[in-house]
Length: 496
Image 1: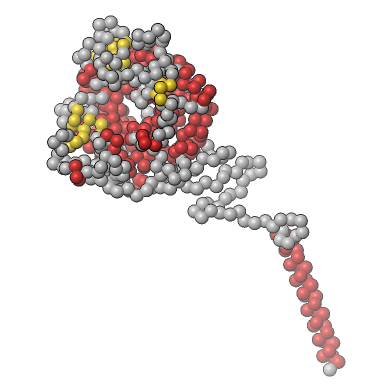
Image 2 (image 1 turned 30 degrees about the vertical axis):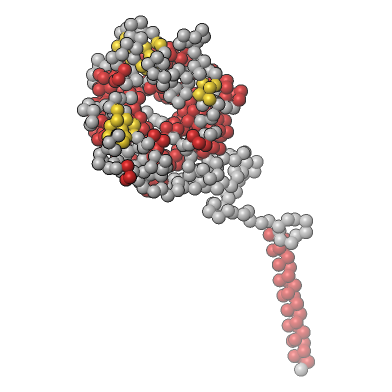
């Protein structure tokens, strides 16, 4: 009995000792994790927004990008019919006010999340722009393109133009999107090229007064024809398809034969075949594409086609029409939307007497002049290109001073429309600043373009916004916002 009591006491002592050891271990564990240690805040896991990746550890003294909510993918769109046949009635067509349309490929609308813009973010503007280019393309296809490859302009009663088809072809090549390129090319050839009987493209296709859908204006707009040929040339290289090159060569040949005139021994590309025979052929400075002519000179077997001479005349038109006073007492400061050349004298003149639409303002045509010249400078290092861009000081100064560019200026640099247009910022201002002032180019992107394109609720609708919402979105504006941003991001190669 006495031994039993001793054994019980020993066991009790052992249990007490074991509890003491366990308690000591628990306190040490609590000290290591920081839990319940007086004066030290508990370490908590950072909150993670559903759908966001868990944050990763950042090095000391490194700014941490804020958590960004991905921009929503484009909303589901209601398909519209493919190109109507001549017997299709308007009741079977999408209303001009309808903004939804069928897409080239449903899978193509799945676009990557675009990082939102936030003050102090370390996500570079270029990174955001690269993702946005993909999203803009998917949105464009969903809104403006049919399954058969027709690009429609909802603001103009669903017409199609050679210009719109050319932009789609160029963007498809630069986005490496052959599934889109081929149907666009097929529709363009069948509906705009074949009705003419040569290798150029009718400018306008749409609904005729008899309710049939067909070519409405068989004349050409030469910027579209040269851009289609360029797209085919680039596509032949990118996708190793000789047939595209053959098509390009046919267009190049007819473009020279039917839209290039000679004045005082120098070749000039006129605005369209309709302008060839007039005493003062109309010119559009924003059509001139020296980098394209460099490529044509390399592939055109007909050496009587002086594409290098057309490069020289392009710069003569661009610079000559920019500084031309057009009857005023002071020289011009910005390229005009339109001008003309007098065949008798070889002098550049205003084209306004031929049509009130051929004005000398710097606006929705003229800003493209800057982009095309900037492209040539990047591609060739042309000194005339750099000199010309440097001469457009009024735009550079306006941006630096006011952090704003007007939608329209007069020929002498005075604002005429103080609305803000993203296509003007991207296609004109951004191209200029990318070449001349990279810091200000970054600022234009981060302060003007990205905040508007990525604003909450519009991330799936990054079409150019206007100060006046009633002006709505435009297929033209979306194209030139894309071209400007792609130039800034260095995503427009001319060789593959």
